[in-house]
Amino acid sequence: MAYAKRWLFESPASCDFAAQSGWGWFGLVPRRLVAALVEALELTWLRGPEAEGALTRARRIAAGLHARLAVGGGRAALQARLEAHSHTVFLLVSHRSLESEAPIAALRRAGARFVPLIHDLIPLTHPEYSRSRQVARHAARVATTAALADGIIVNSSFTASTLLPQLARYGRAVPPLAVAPLGVDLPPTPPALLPPEPYFVCLGTIEPRKNHLLLLHVWREMADRARALPGTPPPPKLLVLGRRGWENENVVDLLERCDMLRGIVQEVGTPPDAEVSRLVANATALLFPSFVEGYGLPVAEALSLGTPVICSDTAPLREVGGTVPEFLDPLDGPAWIERIEAFATPDSAARAAQCARLRHWSRPQWAEHFEQVDALLDQVIGLPRPAAAPLPLPSREPSLA
Image (cartoon, rainbow, N blue to C red; front, side, top):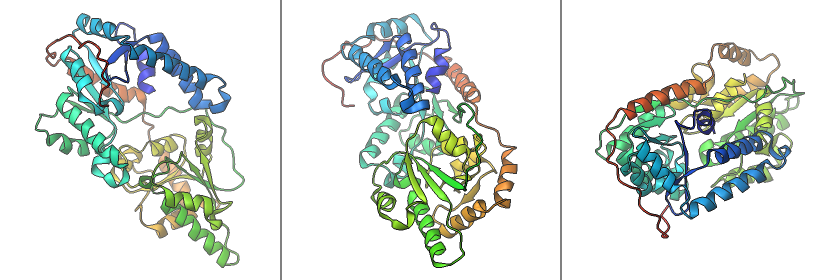
């Protein structure tokens, strides 16, 4: 979204938008339709069901683009663009189209330099936290990057450190690389409410890597202790924000069937972005016990909203949070209980100390991200242009992707 919005503000002479058909080839798509799709999607994400008609509009636009591409629409325009401009870069910021090398190789043979954005290497470095089919897919994405990339964008130094050994396996010299942390877009200022009682939030897809299981056992332990010891205050509320993912049966069983958690742990699901921001902004703290991340966007978002963070002590989260969050071992349940209870007390000194540190933390800015990207693109444009060859004619055989 940030990339689409940034380049929609650029001159049409400097940027075109391409999409991939179900058959594998790429074609240019009308700029006005891209702008309409971005507007409808952004409204849907921000306001959810209140954005009446926005999701329907987005689906209608997407379906029209899909039909256009299916018959080869936009391919001639793409060929003309590549022939007319000798400094073209194909910028791909999703992992999705990296899985198949051939369509990108065709663009490169036609004269485009190629720059992907790599978000993480988790399926390869931690396959136990990924769906099995994603491991092979991600290996194919790295192979495409190693074979074809003229430059690479990564979202963190940690991602760079895990990508470089993977690329080294292919024996090709590593192309220019830009470490460009993702920016945080703040929604309209959420109301600074004073909730009637303290509550914590965790934000992310419910999957094993995010370690919801630790938090639910922590809350069960606090609830059991409060019940067993008269005079012990009940635990604070926990709001679980995020959709249900995969291989999460133990977590779902606790959410649905554990009597100890009823009334104190609430699965909120996926409310609109504005509501998520309001809930995070007014929380006692964000809890993020993830085992591994490429970047850690929820940590950056919470800190940007002025909300303290208790998170795993891992390299990418330290890169994002600096010295501000409370960093804990993601397996140390007693330590999490101690910190959560310390933050939940009235006039918490621990929370006040983090809020004081937070005043010196700087929110990641998209402007700074794109400064790094622009510098990389300038460097890539200075490289020798790939030998130009016409794009192959459309085939009616679907791609393996």
